[in-house]
Image (cartoon, rainbow, N blue to C red; front, side, top):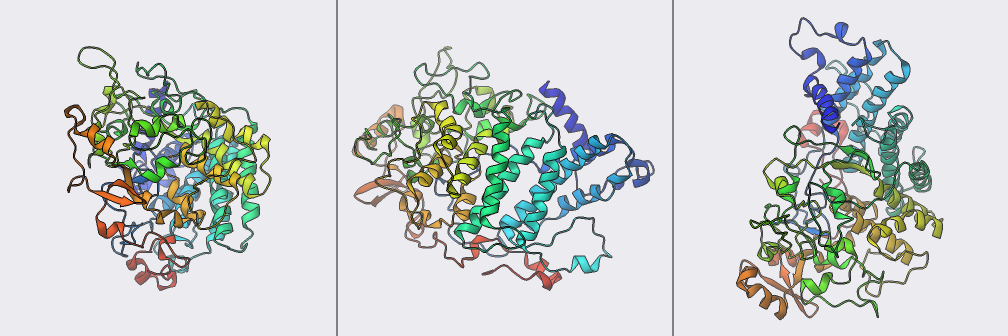
Length: 591
């Protein structure tokens, strides 16, 4: 079944994949606008060619954040970008391809609902593209039709206000939510529910961004009505009763340590997400047909170097629901990683390398092997912080082969819907215990964590957002961080919450504690004979403890990680060449 659907989309991708127009495809004398736009199959195949704009499997979702550290310091977080080397978000080819379709689909004859389905898919993708533009660039020109070289007025137009473009994004997604297929992703096609989840995501992002950046309502959108829409669309998905938070089961014949089931982590290494109640929209992969490399990259030997920061690890509660530094929490401390994970939220030991989760399924003798190569957890090529991120690691060794991982990927996961609903309601001051029981507590039930209440105990050692939060909103944000870790949300969360003060915490740049117990452990031959304090594994003293230092002293002593209200990093630059070509664009502030 899965192979069938992948193959169908692969055919479409082969027909319409590049920035060239459909009319540029060989043979030129047999495919023209006049010969192509006739049947709904033509629309389907063209839409298939745009599916490459949907996200695929990625190991580095949160590599620029307070929760994760990579081999090299982030040029964004340390403000080292220039206009010439900053990421270039000024891309219009895919939008033009969407608009090319929108200018021609009316010529097709067929069932109107089916025509609208493919129009909805194209508008969904156009909305994703414009959403990325306004998140990263702010104001941008909005085009809803194909431009030619003679459209000088449009080509040299100034940028449209961000909220005007936001309204167009919402309109496209609303159309998609009405007309796309309603099959929970079984066909592999964009669904109406994926459109609703994206609507909720967009509205939460800009609703909170406007609130915490003190932006007034404009172009018909303000913080409150966007947050109401986020709550509405997430609630519609919840009320459909089509989705649920489920316990991930073993896949590929792998096994778990009997007393430590991987109900959370197993969800991310499922061979097939067809029929998985948490998959609002999955991306399907298949062995020897369509594959990725996430299984290789996510292992301690995979070379990504990605590890949780000390601040990221401290985010996780105790298994009894208490913050680690609160009196009576039962926290054993951090003299060893073993102490640190014991008695914690199970999502912690299911996310980092440790003895509670399997490394691989069987060794040469055919016995299950649980022990990690601990020397790799402090390796620059693996988990350089001591907390190697293993969220997408499968213990099936077949997944470790280069470009040979074929477990499916969540494009849209129901867990995010619940988190959006809880946060939007809390921001609006209408988060009741019923809301929590229907959202946050569904996530906690999966891993056996105590329920969150509307009056949670305050964290005795809270992280600094730069402003005061209610204990409830603080815990909802914590839940979002640990549930969605490394799925690509954290930097956006920091920006929309106006919370770059989080990055001032030195623990966001440090790894595990380098205690006498840990040094003795790593000195053993079976644990790698790793030594600390030298060039390979320097240590950094902070608040009376020694930590594994990841970056050079110049970075540790830098004050550039915290952004000011007028900091240029809220937006990326427009390439200089584009501003030269069209002076009406103007450059983003600070660039």
